Image 1 (cartoon, protein in one colour):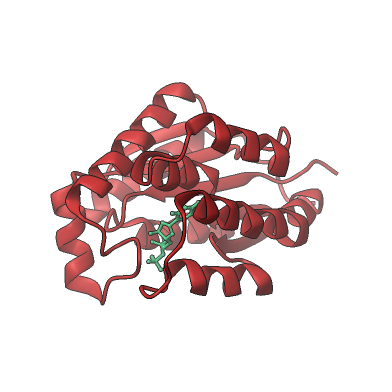
Image 2: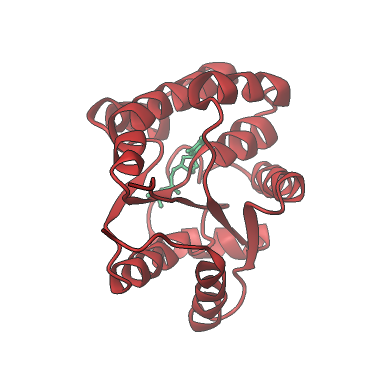
Length: 210
Ligand code: TYD
């Protein structure tokens, strides 16, 4: 059996990624694909515990500790959820993955890019998503949307310049890996973004279900 495909969704907070994630999942299911939906940090019991710590506004930690905890969560996630699902020919859709560590811990917190690269190869070897959708939006607009929705978590309550650095790091990653990471203009209407996402999904060669 062929292995499944791994799709990740990325973007600064407020880019509208969660709405589009529902669309990606529905699109795949509509094609009869077996889909596993998951998220980072999180996706496993331990990962969700780490997520609570990482997102809690009262948590104080060194930026490298934050990077290490993100990759600790990822190690579990790969072992318990992502790799087994791909081996079973399933389609894994993850709300964020390693590009977020480069963007938030690297760009936002200033953790050394090479150190993150070392964690990346340590934790995931050669495994990379087959397709990454990066929902790009100016920081001010993203912040407005976050503000409208809910109380802010530890990352969302950071200042504008933090989110600006996060966005710039995402753009840098997208330039480094143009075949994998596709930039979607998230300023458009939900419907226009959805159409752009659909065009990208159609370009991937999907393995038909058994
Ligand atoms: P997010 O995906 O925005 O979830 P929600 O939509 O429920 O708010 O929250 C996860 C936060 O974790 C987000 O602000 C980005 C951050 N994050 C990192 O800083 N590094 C990482 O490696 C990952 C996966 C996420």
